[in-house]
Image (cartoon, rainbow over all chains, first blue to last red; front, side, top):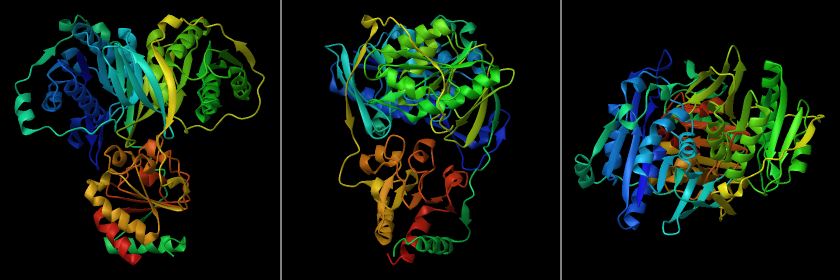
Length: 263
Length: 317
């Protein structure tokens, strides 16, 4: 059996930052494994550990920078990695879900996995649409926002819980092959072991251009473009207490006592 | 040309977002000078259609097929409807079920998709306002196309009111049963347990800023001193440090205490959805730009590990 996991890094913004043109100034960004993908990788590795002869392959759309993140996924137990990138992709500011899915699609078709695990969303732009778009393009089945996944590979099906709003879960049976978008909390992502980190350095990480996956630049045509980026105006009228911790805690205590707290 | 808004329901009830979409849809239809149509798929569609017939709605299209949401049925039905109505703008809810069908639908009918809109304007193009980096930054995206699909964030627009004179139109979507690859087998309530945070008058709520499970003591000490109940934001529950029944937010519980003290909680939209109805909101966070300060009444920008013990001491803890 083969499990494909989509992996991306996300930009995390410092507490204090500046906007530069259509984005946050790079000086205030650090990149880390997308939180949702961390859970997706863990889920894939657990499936591999529970079964015989299960291969876990990560697939990424991203520049060379993202390899540090991909190596983390390999260190946690993925077997090998594919990264799709091209100078033509780098020139685009905005990759929408359809475009990302179109870039992933030929890799998934070639790998021909039983399941694809994808984070529900990325923590930076949060489109939350790539996984289900990918399923549609592949003619795979799918389930979005999965927080429990029980696989019956022999029956060619999976039973999942989808995390709905308000503490309710939907129980759904899905035919394979399928794409599942993975919600945080589905498992406890492991830390990579030192041995895992060493091994990750020698695991295959294949880089493919548009031409390598049989696409041309027309796949990047999208009607969407960013037109502005700005800090939202503070809506709040919060009274912010100033001073040292003892001082601010004292002022807050007064407010709380006025409201009958702790009486 | 029309604007087509798609309603959402669960267990026999229309969800609030359906009526909010009517408000967005009417604004957008006015901006481009067209009609507002509404679609509802599965469930008691006649009853839903009556309720969706609000002021400004020109037509409600119903597809009676099955009781609960199934994404295969929904995508097939709406794809057929989009083919027939050729809407200029397709408005969908940015909900868990919206995430389960909107991307597939947009891809199938070839519409560009922008998700999680918090504002929409029509200039030369449709311009969608979104948030990035957990609400720290807003961006606008222009859609240079004649048609588009947009998922709309819940609770950003008011619900449409009044009674309209919409035509109710049963739509024959000819669902292909053989193309249905998933089956909903049931529902499960997961937030039960001994503590009901929605009943508490005072909540001391803890978020990602607490860092480690061992650090939770400082929060429980404060709660004890205040005679309050401890609740949490999603990352703390995801990490398994507190059970699901303590989670405040979209996927947890909606709470309306007299006082809500958010400690190390950034205030992501999913969290805010669960606690903005609190009478008094207090935020303690070291990040002055954390969105929680936008809805807080009182704030302290400082290290929680300095402030919280000092506050506990104020109350004799």
